[in-house]
Length: 106
Image (cartoon, rainbow, N blue to C red; front, top):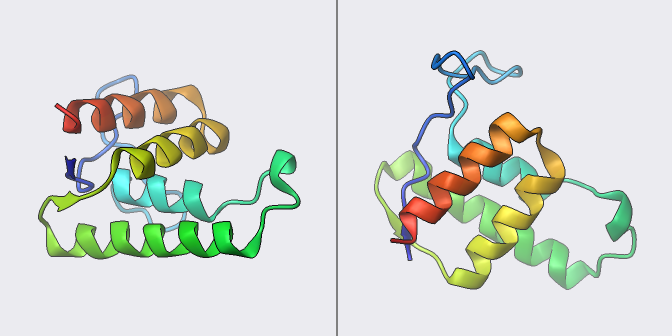
């Protein structure tokens, strides 16, 4: 599926959410990469192969974001991104990110 990770997340007021680390608009690419690179309590024994898979996927997403074009991702990759976004972020961000990914799948 082709995905546009340059989409900006909005607050409940409709204004762009700012990245607390950079002050820039928070994009789907940043949310996805941070979720993929996160550490989770229920994954303490995550194998190295899975950590590498997540790292490489985060890198691809961020590189795609810089290219400002849609890139091809598998359904399994996007399912993993959605699962981890739900673990890593509050509802206002996770809900929008899921909707953006679902819309990109159409």
